[in-house]
Image 1: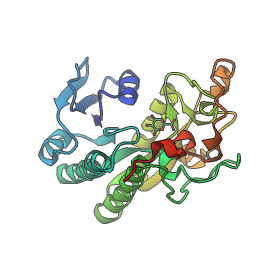
Image 2: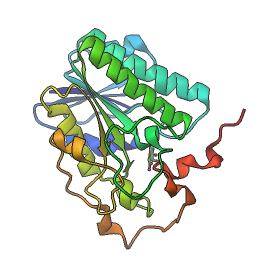
Image 3: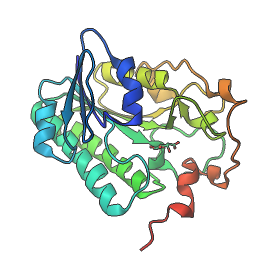
Length: 258
Ligand code: 15L
């Protein structure tokens, strides 16, 4: 199983590389920043915004894990160019090269302005982005839906919570996705038979979870970690914006002006 990973120099990809390595798998690592490939890996220095380079990078791959792009709020022009146009090019390149499956790193910020009432937010919540970044994740999900319905690609969108080595704030006691569980979720998204188009939450088995794991589990995801194990170590922020699913991304501090 050959897997192209975009955004390979980024934080999530760096945590995933050793966890996704398999003797019978090539990981093709694509980023604008140079990446040093290890055993079973290949590196491609290119931008997701370059359709020809993306199409070339997709050749011979069985799936694309699209992690590339801006991972926080930025000015509209940058979000539009890198996250929205770039994600279009990833899907289009996959289609042109005959790659049958794309796993797209969406985000909780696609639905960040939904009120957080403490109950588990359901799967497939209607888009309610909290930032231009969140809008780009909604656009990526929409592109995934289109490329499934029109061209038959299998597309799994992961509405990732907070994927870091450890939870560091009280919000992350609800939203944490451990690196090991992230790899488990990606493996489920890569191996579920004919998933079609899916949108699943990406969190660990957190005692204080705000989000449903029903759809992720239906793909075969079995989380093993729980942020609660770190409850004594996190910073308590009591962020007033935790009344929304997107937390601090809902703050006016992220207004882009204009
Ligand atoms: C995200 O989508 C961001 O990429 C990441 O930096 C975190 O802020 C995360 O969401 C989160 O909500 O914790």
